[in-house]
Image 1 (cartoon, rainbow, N blue to C red):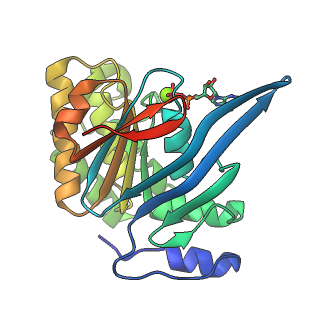
Image 2: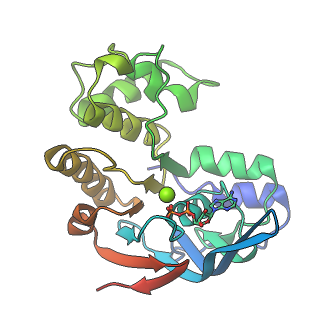
Length: 245
Ligand code: ADP
Ligand code: MG
């Protein structure tokens, strides 16, 4: 795992004070509200949400459709900005960063597994894994990509295209891709989606292994299977976060 890149990006943006410490959690939300206004309608997707995720911890966020799960994950992944409240990565407040700094953090600090696989159909499994490195792909990155595909059990599928892969295999390519830049934080939206139970367990086993290496993992889901693998489960109810157990 490379060192955190957050302070650098924050320093470059010159907007936030640096208070990074060895004890700073990799991920934290404090008092986060997200209000969407659309056509005169107001949706309070997140309300006063507090969440702290430690290094090596796997947190499952469960809740019914529309409870704010994707909004919360997108906020953690700097794809959405809170209406009010703070987002801390490695102790630095990042919700005010400019687009360029956010893009850098997304690339260097955060691995994201989207609800759909988002694999490019014309590319092979390996080429899809290498996508995040496309501006600086080299021999070393390619070796790392091959290693990651082997690690997720797809060593013999490296040159297959998505149409030649099952749903579980596609999700494992997406996991390998999320790890290509050695993130400190891994965020997953409905990672077991439409997968059957056995395939879902394989995917969740990968998350367990990633946690053991010290990565902070957050998965938002309606699938109770995920909670079996998580260190901690919290629940979103109408945009409010509650402890589950
Ligand atoms: P979940 O992932 O739990 O199904 P979401 O976070 O996608 O829930 O959505 C939470 C609420 O916010 C829903 O009522 C949804 O319609 C609304 N919402 C999400 N994104 C937007 C947006 N960009 N504009 C307006 N409303 C949105
Ligand atoms: Mg969702």
